[in-house]
Image 1 (cartoon, rainbow, N blue to C red):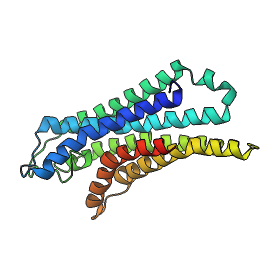
Image 2: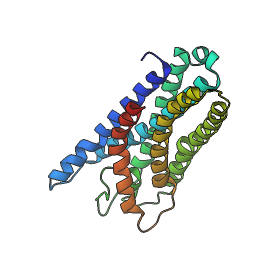
Image 3: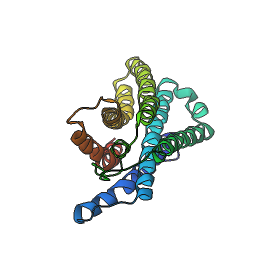
Image 4: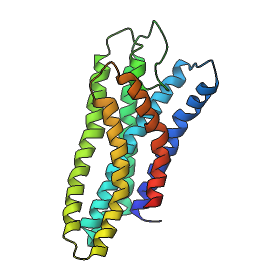
Length: 239
């Protein structure tokens, strides 16, 4: 277990546990309780943790794809490239960037003036739903959310696609069937997790608004915050 792959996987597990712990307890309380209220500070904290952990998971998944790329395309140099110093640097960068982005969103959020109906039409304090309660123009917040989505979703996804194209080319050049199967099994679990996580996140934060979007967002966010963390251990265990 003392390899870069499992070191990165342990951080993914920590993120998933924290992700679920941030949203699920309050959601369960709301299901059994008629008084479904949350004060301003816990709501903002929930938003901050949700955004920080989501962005960090995106970047950790990129680090994991880079690890697989080096393992398959440069196997003889793997231990040199993916040293403990490099792994630690990747993890620290992922956590730092994720929570700095979340902090920017929260700073822009708390400067807004909120009035009128104070009902968050969502299962938890999700940033887009909280923004709808503001009495002032929120175009700056929306522009920053879109820019951050490009940075943590589109950019990493493009990097992963490039790395997996290189991996596919390397696998096709492997002569033995056993070697090909081993290489495919190494990448399949990560591809499943990436497809689920990035697909849902891009639909929620990058698809233009529509009349039916709000209800779809609730379902996708529930899957994102509850079922995704449950599925990740299953996917990697089966692998």
